Length: 159
Length: 159
DNA sequence: GTTGATATGTTATAGAATTACAATTATCAA
DNA sequence: TTGATAATTGTAATTCTATAACATATCAAC
Image (cartoon, rainbow over all chains, first blue to last red; front, top):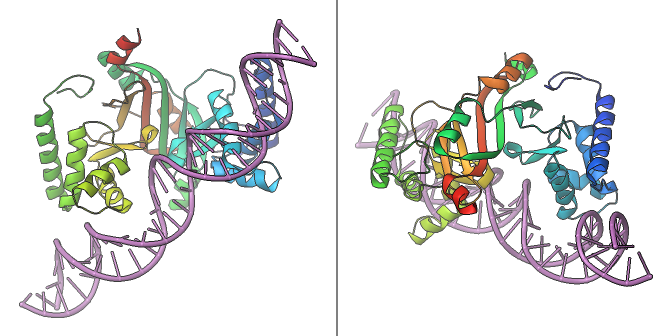
């Protein structure tokens, strides 16, 4: 079980833990963790990768749940806006958050070989970006950081 | 004329300079800076903001150029893949690069009030992200960094 | 229970980007 | 100069992504 994510890990355990943490966070904040929302989070945790909204929708449809795009998008919006999942802009896809409930600025390492995604942390206030913002009077509220490259496995495969 | 970009500047000068630098870079690298590609870069430089592909396409259409999406997307692909323009994922839009030809990792400050975009620099290899990449054996080739917040003008307007 | 807010179901549409194929133009070696 | 090859452009059709709008149902607090 590794925060970085390019390694094997206790998948079932990480799924269970993820669900429990979100359950607890929802209870604490008075959010409704409805069956539909829960199911979408389960799918993201199961997949353990970035999944497209329509990919999720297809599964929901097979399961007999609603079959229209808003069904998937609403659940995803809920998860994303509460920090339980993240959107990977580069892939137009969504991934379960590895640190749900914690306040953090996620940064993603996206493998262009296998599309695996690892979640890391970043601190946009520091470094060149933070300095540029301060110098120009810009207030950073949120940051999307996505690094594209090759994961260890694909680096090896390429050689 | 400021790299940060939330301030007034010599717009005509920056347009001319931008075109010249790209012209030179294309000549050096044996790239074809065709009229269509040039026109799209001109539009981006004129606008001095992030513009959608279909917004550009509308202008090209009015001017009697091609009117199908690939006309715009091809020119934009050329500009982006050669570092003469950047795509702002958050806005599904494109903006002229402020440092064409130079090797750099752009970082964008995007105002959620007025959609103004400023280009800054970042160094993905340093900081928390760089460390996470090294620790996990991930090779960063490219990074998308987009900070969302309020520019000085909108901060003031909000108060 | 009533009520106001929140969540779901469904239709339709808007917005962004690509595929595929034909036609043209540029590049470069023979 | 010519002929072969690669790069670019034109156009139609389609695919993928996301949201608007409105009706219905469910929840939560009074």
